[in-house]
Image (cartoon, rainbow, N blue to C red; front, top):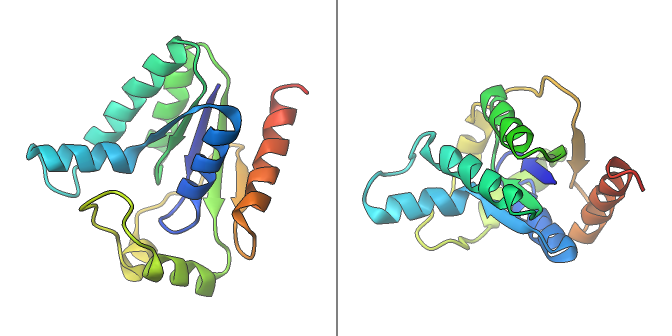
Length: 170
């Protein structure tokens, strides 16, 4: 299965993806990690453009073809990025679950963005204005929305696991 987790910076998607990966023993594929590796190589500077996503799609498909469950985590801001993750799952002949992580409380969201620490060395984090100004298209198809506002990460994980159980036919 391919589980695509998207959302703006500071919504809790990395925390949720890590918890889910540990719970279901899945590969956590994080586009931020790919993009920072590209920048660290000297081949590009931030923002690196679509190359991080293109590498992510290829890695996701490779892992899926090996029979692994993949959690692909990124901002995933555009229909074209969402379609590309979907295509990777289709090519690998696996089900795809799309998840959008939001934080509906602007005060809480801003607090997360302004107080979080870098967990990938030298990764530049956006400030609150950059998060607010990020080009982020509304989703054009059915997907699961997890609102992390006022919730502990384990509560968000429980909602996601419940959805995955139902999506998997349990």
